[in-house]
Length: 317
Length: 259
Image 1 (cartoon, rainbow over the protein chains, first blue to last red):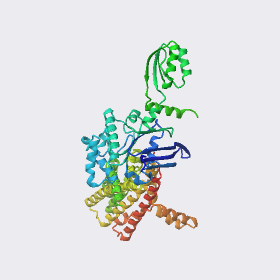
Image 2: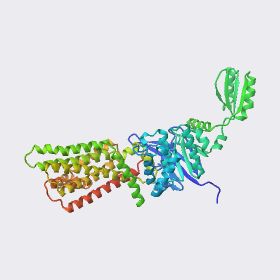
Image 3: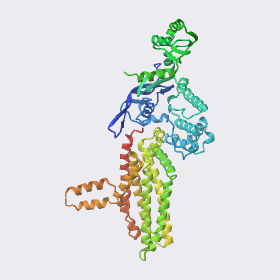
Image 4: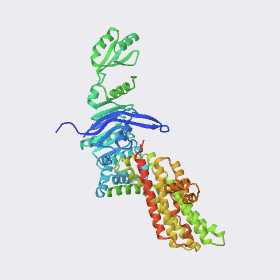
C-alpha cells in the first residue's frame, strides 16, 4: 500500500473554448489546465477575476463541457452522473427559488439528492443548526440577506453528506463573524475526512485553512503546491527601513539590486529584498550617508506568491 | 427508475409551486373566465342557436387562454432557470438534464390542467345559468384541449432550451397556429398536380403538430358523438409528439454549456 494520498479531483490538459459573436469566433478560456486535489485536504483554487476559476469549476460540475482534456472526480469522468452522488456544490452568489422557505428548499435538494424520506427531516434540522439558520427555517428565502442565502447554499451542498465539497467563493457576502463560522465549518469538513475544493479571492482565508493551492492566471495554472512550500519559496527575505538617502543613492540601489522592491521616497524608504542581499545593501546605505532605522525578517505571504504569479503571467514572452 | 421518477417529481412539484405564483397565470385565467361569461352577452345578440354561440365562445376562450398560459409560462420554463442561475445547484445533484426537462414540463402541464379545470367549471356554471345543456361531449372536448396543451408545453419547453423567452413565445405561438392549419395544408397539397408538392406537404404534416386532432368543439357544442377511437388516437398522438419533442430537447440541452 503506497503512502501517496488518493487523488480525488484530477484535471488533465483541460482546454475550454467558448463561441463568441455569432458562434463563428472562439475564445479560449482555459489552456491546458492540470492539477490534482487529494483526499481529505482543503484545496484552494485561486486566481484574479476572469482567470478561469469558475469555468474550471463548472467543467467539474458538468455544467460546461470541456473542449479538450479530461476532468475526473473520485476516478470517474465528470460527465458520469454517478459522480454527483458524492459531491456537493456551492456556486458563487447562489440563487434559489426564493418563494420557498429554507426548510422547503433543503427538502427539495434532499429529494433531488436521493436522501431517504425517513432521514430527510432530521438531516434538514441538523444542517439548519450547522449553518445557524434554525430560527429562520420557515421564512421565505426572499426575506433572507445575502449572508443567510450563502448559508443556505452551504447547507444544500452538504444535504446528502457528500465526500467532496466544491465551494465557489464561500466567504462572499459574509460579515467577519459569518466568515469565521464558514471557515470553522470547512475545517470541520476536513476533520470529518472530506475533501474541500475552494475557489476564492480571499487569500488570507486560503493561507489560514488550505493545505494546497493552485494559482490560475489567464486560463493557465501558474503555480501548484502546498501553501507552506509556496510561501517558503518567497522572493523577499527582509525589510530594511532607511532614512536620509539622496536621490542618486536610491537610484544606485535600484540598479545594484534589481530584485529589491522600494516603497516610499525622500526621507523614509522601505526596501524589501532577498535575505542574502541584506548585508550588501546595508553597507551601500551607510556608504551613501543614509541611516538604517530597522531591519526585519520578512516572510513572503501567499499574496506575494500570488502577485508574483500574476506579474510573471503578464510579462511579455 | 423509482429514483429517477422521484427526482422528476421533485422538479415538477417545484415548477408547479413556482407557476402558481405567476401573476400572468391569474391574469390570463381572469380574462378567460371573463370571456366565458361574456358569451352570455354575445349569445343575447342572436335569436337562434343561443346555447351554441354561448358554448362556442366558451370553448374558444378555454382553448385560447389555455394556450396563452402554456406558451407564455412555458417559453421561460428552462431559460429562466438558467438566467437566474437556479439551475446550477439543481444540476449539481444527481439529476440528468433530461429528468430536469421532463420535470419542468410535467409541473407546468399539471398547472395548466388545473387552470383548465377552473375554466371548465366556469364554462359549466355559465352554461347552467343560461340554460344551455352540458353533456359528456363537453367534458371530452375539454380533456382533448388538455392534451393539446400538453403538446404545446413540450414545444414551449423545447424552444425554452434554445432561445430567449420572447423568441420562444413567438415560435411556440407560430407552431400553435400552424398546428391548427397543418391538416388543411396537407389536404391542399394532396390536390396539387405538381408531383413534389404532395411530398413536401406530406413531410411537413409528419413533422408539424396537428392540433386539429384535439379539436372536438363542434361535436361538443352541437351534441354530436365523439368516438372513443378518436380520443384514443388523440391520447397516443399527444403522448408520442410530447415524448419525441422532449427527447430532442433533452439531447440539445445536454450538449449546452451553462455559462
